[in-house]
Image 1 (cartoon, helix red, strand yellow):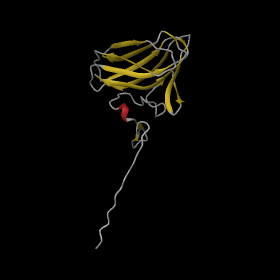
Image 2 (tube, rainbow, N blue to C red):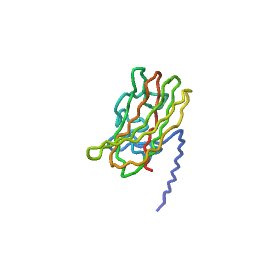
Image 3 (cartoon, rainbow, N blue to C red):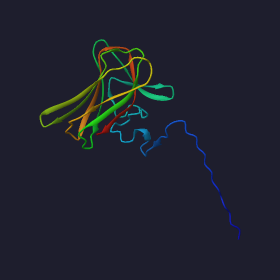
Length: 169
């Protein structure tokens, strides 16, 4: 009786993150692990996001586009489960070459009984056309579900967002 030996060699070259697809067809990015936002990397169309935004391709990457208006702020948001965290770190990547305005406000809102609570932080946006990282730490949260609201101040120009994350503190 002859024995047959098989050697299997697999070589993989990765030029970026490896994405997995769950049974519902939602693509997950391992770099977004721990993220409380749905679709923070914008790879699943409009899932999770509401408000004044649209999704566009930036090369081979999908990003959120928000166009500022002189007549008032532009708002986009998502409701998330805090998983009983008392604080959140909200961080994201953005780029703009032409935005002129006061910047971005990040608000965490929730209701307890008849009282509405809001915690916020402001972010200045640098208009140099390069991807930048920004964010804020929001503390003293006392709710299991919150709405995270991003408000782009009135102005002009376009801002692109990607890899939006909310992490438990």
